[in-house]
Image 1 (cartoon, rainbow, N blue to C red):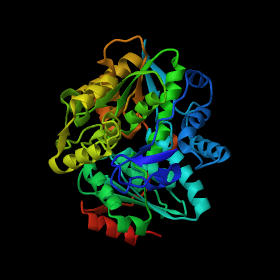
Image 2 (tube, rainbow, N blue to C red):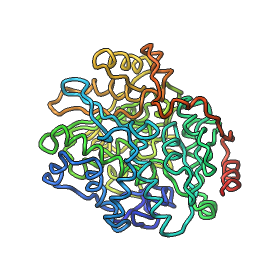
Image 3 (cartoon, one colour):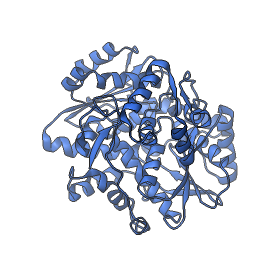
Length: 462
């Protein structure tokens, strides 16, 4: 399996190098040269299998010869051994034909663990046999950072620098990053919003001399391996509800478009997904794009679902690449327009394809709180604000015989203030995190300035 950049000017790489590189050298994102497919019988055979076995079968075609089968099975087993639920990503029924896919049973209580724990194990095997060192830099709107830190903390061949928007993540999210004592971990509070953090991350990768000197590696959802790991739970949940013998639908709370793009990949592989619904909060660039065909940035407005407070949805570029028949030159033009003019118009053909496979909706702050209350009353399920955005949008979709699966992306205890304001209930952290607010914090506040960030990274590697 070979990987190509969405902008067409970067080297073609194998899986291992694409994973270690993260962002392509031309500023694009790596995608498989072709989409592997699974037959109906292969998908049907997933029924009743452990999560780890389905993960091996779904991801194996993408990995190529990067790992032997024995290595890859060991990587998967170690990645999910610490999850707090035997099913890893269990389904819970909300209504007659509506199900919640719980993705928060990993070590940091968010769906990012499903991918990040796997990537941590992949990096460890790859770096261990090559003797390389890498500097992981990441940008987070809340959950990616803690998941990355948990996956890479204490590793000898890795230094980790995670940027987050100062004052714009929940207290739990911040403390999960800033209370880790390992010397290879650095939490950087950046003056700005998530889009600023993500822009500085891309700037570092596009500063090729710095990138090469530091041995930069990226683990944001721009990293293909992140998306790949998330494809698995679309298959396990769909098969549990009757796929491939009947179609399913998904609603995905999303800001950076990585999680819902994983659903698109599952559909390209042969999973019968009737519709993918994009659920956004008030930072609704993706919803507006579907409605109007104009992909135009507006200012980021802080919300009670902060992991979705994003206006530059990086993984949307991967979908655009397919919508424009893999015309890398056109994608480079669109991304330049987004950076320089703040947006672009989709072509009529691309917009028609987008609407054929996707739906969308948005939730205001009040609607999000209402969804938390209503779901608790009707189904005895306490939702985090992001999951509540998903449930609200899912319930607005047209009726269908195909079951609806809404992705629950985080544990409600990660956002206790918002949940308590909506329900009067303050969700408790699991016992293993009960002392989180007693642990000392360690962070560095930096301006939204590339030189300042690069100077800190270069001066604080071990």
